[in-house]
Image (tube, rainbow, N blue to C red; front, side, top):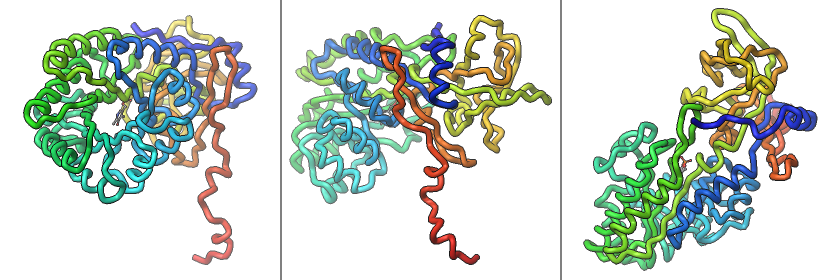
Length: 421
Ligand SMILES: *Cc1c(COP(=O)(O)O)cnc(C)c1O
């Protein structure tokens, strides 16, 4: 069972709200650090182990800096994410650039920063050479196709747009070697929000097998494998969190069985987790504006899908607690909504909650990854602030809320003044 507690007391929250109006996202720094340390420890047996935090989950330099302190790098997928990493002083091989359908200028920046480039397609070897030059180290994203089932979210790898086929991985490494690449790695991403720890051990096993074949068949000795992301988080109270020690130990066992006897040791293990690094430690705090009683009972919040779109778009479960009513029986049935002119703007459908009153504070859990990051401005919604709960209980605003000026900033009202339709 996953514990769904708030890291702040009612009193503390009242104080925060005096300074920062709802809705806002708030992250628990100590919990992020504790989890990062636990994860690193699970893989401490592998000398070159490195986690590259998937920036897209929570693209905020304060969060990235906290993780950098713990030895994490950054997994970037776009130019702005590379620039964020650079701002944090995360450069060179502390960055993994795992992009797809990549514009030339993003490869240019990646080369300038000296990052590890993880190519998504065999044709990108030439594209990279033409626009940015061939680096000393390269990684290829492997799509195992029929050889492996993706999990429910990722789906069938054969239908996925990502990566090289198995044949292309071999071909690609030969081409890269001929062009002067000296160091090689392989990456794969076959699961998203997966809660079965064995899945990640099996993925490592698959990549170790590939490493053996690359060595035996074409003489390519891999320097690293990248297990990428996909560790899920227990969104529902009845879900069980992935046992990180089980994953670390399981991968170690396969490493000893396959990597060591095949003279592939030392082989570095890299990961690019995002969701499990920041997701459980971020909360969306909102206030109840309206109660509405028609065919169903509705709780209307001052947050909307523009602040957290996962429930509306994917039907995802996010646990909701009503501050101060944690011990009151959940004997009322509600849909919890935002104010978009979209009926899927609901944080919860048919959810049992304690009796809700107007003005109640509502905490939406597990919003730390793909929460604020997926925010948008549809219906004129302004994106909220992001706050950081520091280990000493101080509150730091790490991103201010958008203003109307921000919203209108890209419109040219000067040109509009003289405009005749
Ligand atoms: C999204 C993504 C990740 C992170 O996945 P999580 O599910 O957040 O752990 C890692 N690598 C790539 C290439 C991704 O697209």
